[in-house]
Image (cartoon, rainbow, N blue to C red; front, side, top):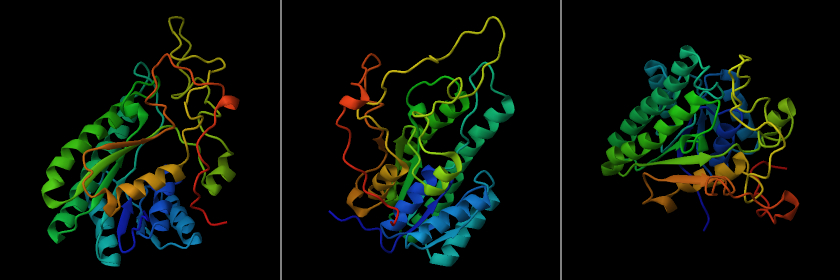
Length: 302
C-alpha cells in the first residue's frame, strides 16, 4: 500500500515547531501542498522552510485561530492560492499551565478559547468550503493523553483536550452526510525530531528530561501543600520503550487523510508506544531489556 496525497491541499494550524511542523512535513512528503498556520508568523515561516528543504510546496498563513475574521482571511488565502482545501489539521493549542489550585482565570480562559474556538472556527469554515464544493475531505484534531486520563498540573490543557474528543465525534456526525471525515489523533509526549528545535533546546523530550516539579511548574510553598507527583527516579513508563516522534505522528495522520481511510470517521488514533493502554500497576521491563519498535521511517532528507 503506497499512501499518496498528491493533488490534495492541506491546512495545518499550530504548525510549529514540534508536532505541527512534523505533521505538516509528513503531509508534504506524501504529496500534499501545505498551508502552515501559526499565531507566530516566524514559526509558520520556519515550518514552510522545513517543507521546502525537503522538496515540498508550502505557504505560511499566520493568524489567530480564535478570531473569526482572521480565520476567514487565511482560509481564503489558501483557497485563492491553491483553489481548494482537502485536509484540515487542527493542532493549535496553548501548552503548559498549572494545577486546579493555582491556575489563573486568565490562562485557563485563553487556553480553552484557543482550543475551543480554533477547532470550531476552522472546522466550520473549512468544512463549509468542502461541503459547498463537494470535496469529501478529511479533518483531524490533535488530542492528547491528557484528554483521556488525568495528569496533575495542567488543568486547562486537560479540560480543553477532553473537549476536543467529543467535538470530533459530534462534528463527524454533522459532516458525514457530505462525505467529510472527522477524526482525532492522540500523541503522548513525543520526542522532538525537528533539527531546528533540537538545535535550540537540545535533544530529548519530556520523558527524558522531566521538568522541575513535573508538568505545570512549581506549586507554591505553603505549609499545607502536598506533592502532586513523584519527584524521585521514575520507573520505566512506556511498554515499547518510547512514545515516538512527530515523524511517527505524521505517518499516521497522513494515512488518516488518505483515501485508504475513506470510511473512518469519529475515531481516535493513538501512537504512544502503548502508554495509554497499560494498566496503572504495570511497570514495563527495564529499558535495556525491551526490544523496542522498528527504526522510524524518516521524513527529513539526508
